[in-house]
Length: 380
Image 1 (tube, one colour):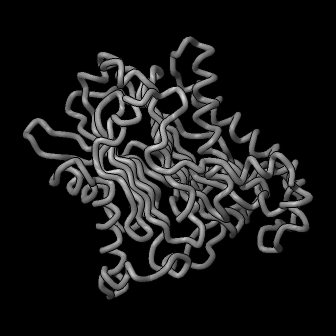
Image 2 (cartoon, helix red, strand yellow):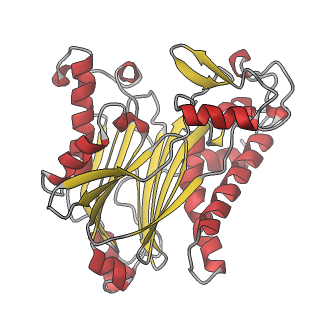
C-alpha cells in the first residue's frame, strides 16, 4: 500500500478532546470545561473554551461512514473554525480537515500572522491542488477518489474581524442582539447550490456554450444533471478531463469534452467587523438547515444554557425530521446508520460564543495562549 494511501486513511483520526502537539496539559484541560461523549450515533462536546470565548460542538452520523469532518483551532493567529461536508465518500473531507488549517497557518506566518482574504484563498487553493495530486497519484488503485468531494465552510476570527469562506451549501448564522433587546438571525455565508437561481445564472454565464450546464433531475437542479453544489474541494471528475473517463462509474462521466472546469474550488470570502451586539455564530452543514430555520436555530441557542447548544440543535433537527416522516423521535434514534440516511444527513454543528473583551485584547492568559485543536471523531 502506497504512503499516500496510508496517509489518506489516517487523516483526521482525532477524537474530541485531542489537543495539538504544542498544547500543554493546562490547555488540554481548558478545552473541555463541559461534558463530552457520545450517545448512539451522536458525538458532542457540550462546552469548551477557545481564546475568544466558549464553544459547543456536536455531530450526528447518518451514512455508513461519517462523511462530515470539523475542527476548531485557536492560538496566536486567532481562531479557525472549519466544517467540511463530504459527498461521495469521506476522503475529501478528511483530507481538508488535515491540510486546510495547516496551509492557512503556514501562509499567514509568511505575513507575520496578518490574516487577509488572500491568505484564506491561498490556503484553499493549496488544499485543492494537494487533493488533485493525491487523486492523480492513486488513479490506478483508487480511481473513484476522483468522484469524492466536500463542501467547506471556514470562519476565521482575527483581531476584531470575522472572515467567512465557503464552498458548497454549509452555512454560518449570526445571533445578534437588537437595540430593543430582541434577537435576530443573520446568515453570513454564501451558498453554492444549483437550486439557487443566482447560482444557475452564474453557471450559465461561465458556460455560455453549454445548454446542459444545469439540468433539473430527480426533483432538484444539478450541475450537468449530476451534483447539486457548484463549488467544492475535490470532485476532480467535474474539473479535469483526465479524471472523467473509465474506470469511474458511468453516472459520473460527461459525454462531451470538458473545455473548462464544470465546478470551482474558489471560495466566496466575506469579512465582517465583530460588533459588541454579536452574540454567537452557528456553523453547520446543510443537514441542520434542511430542518431548522436560521431564526429557530438562534432562538434555541439563546433560550437555553450555553452548555450543550450544538447537541440541542441537532436534536431539534432530528425531531423535525421525525415529525416530517410522521414518526416519533425515539423511534428515529433506533434506526441504524446507512438506513438513517433516508431520514436525515450527517449533521455537524459548532456554536461559537463571542466574548468581545477577549477578542479585542487578542489574548487572555497563558493557558488560552496555548494552541487548542479539537476535531470530530473519524467514524463511529
